[in-house]
Image (tube, rainbow, N blue to C red; front, side, top):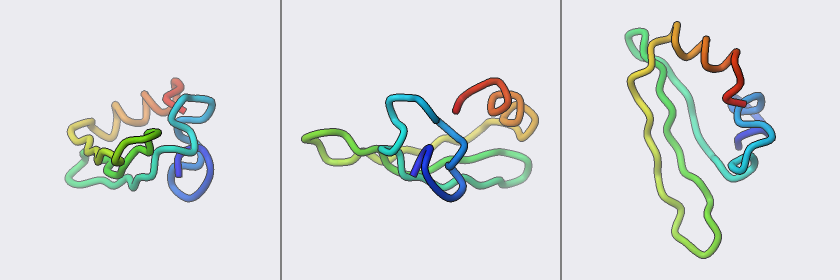
Length: 67
């Protein structure tokens, strides 16, 4: 869960999706991935997949505040 536990504990803190994004990160051939779902009120949870950010870019984005 974003902003709460496990791998997403330090990600997306103080954002509108904190405690509503359930996901898993990973890497494959130097590309960072994120997959999971987002809880929305009164809707089926949409799934999400994000691919294509290099490890270097991901580290830069993470250190500058996607938390």
